[in-house]
Image (cartoon, rainbow over all chains, first blue to last red; front, top):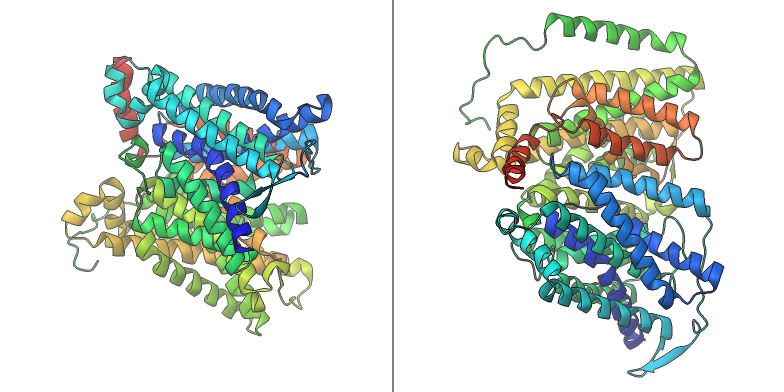
Length: 290
Length: 328
């Protein structure tokens, strides 16, 4: 049973890690705590649900569509709203993104009602054997694809010139600006990429969890804890911390009971904040000086 | 704090005569209001006054001290539960309110020592985590808090109408008192120390002020005020549950009111609470289905249209951004 719980927890942790990468990058690069981030996860799940319901499209096939639409949304919100706000005060962005979250959630309720939906892929009930435990195929797929996307983003940041522009802006905004990098564009690009990764996480989670306008709430704790644990703005930190978080959650549920999961998560969060605020992998990113 | 060598400037009037006149007229109108308004608007204005108290509480830690306690609503819930549990244990309402203020302030004192050492964003999200964790903790404690099922407070033997008017006056008294506390605090050595911390914490420490202690005191005052509002609110609605008492929206709404009204000012939170609550009530009445959407739009528009001069500390950020604009 412990082995089963451990494997399940780690696999879920992979998905949580992907759900967090965008949030952590946006925070690291421009110092914005995006409270609307979990709405992107929710909307990504709805894109997948919509394509599944109307066209019978497989969640994994529809994932790129979810990512593309969330990229456009994230980019547009950054360009039109957030870039103007963060000139004035970084903490104002907390309020603005809270407002955006209200808008996106309520718009989803108006469009899809608040009914709980589900996406059942044809292989939803299949399981595979892994280290002597029985693992649902969808969980394995979700964790595998999450890891893949996380690594892809990591490689993109370090090898593509656009990715390097993002990293440079995160490390030293003034200097990167002197090198001819336009921060406004980098911010929008980062926000778009972050939203796209959140959309992918939403797409994958629609296979595991019920889809509803308020499903983002269940990611809030994970997103905050993993960001701080992994170090703000660190992609590799996010992925590792995601698995760690999944493991801790699973063990908390196994040893203490499911109702203690959240408390353990918050205790971990506060402990890391107080003892090691830069996280396990954190470096001197811009967000830390904000 | 007593060893801090800071003297208040002598004979600086608190407000100009025009402002005093507006305050007196406003207080008279609010004092006489229950005689002439419908129960619906009585409820709206009771809520407005409740938010004046919460926003003044937030003003102490955010506006004056510069520590962005985004999850300050946690003390609203603590106050509500402390009052509710005390009354469930047989105490009268007045004792419940005192217990609520004491426990809220005590929680801020204990939690403040580690958490107030965090800076900027880290402190902001630590308070959000506290707010969210409190929901789970109440559910776990169960017992006298009622856990996930919620807690029904003993009903008053008053008639509903005088009871609601009494609660209105209680909130009005709290709003006046909290505004007075902020005004007095700004004139006290502690208030000067807090404003110094907001502008430069390191320099304040160099001046010989124990900054952590000052910040913890500020948060305790903030928590006490917020806890009072929570206690009266609990008695007012008579049934509390973890998700309504610790609704993160309470703290966030107060934060928005503080931004609208102006941080660190004495009357700003009063104006912010009135504008925000009355507008959102009208929106609620006009757009039943999409009121959250409209409210969200309002928040975004307010922050876009009037962000300048909203946060004094933001001026520094603006200046550092100007250099960026020159280069682009």
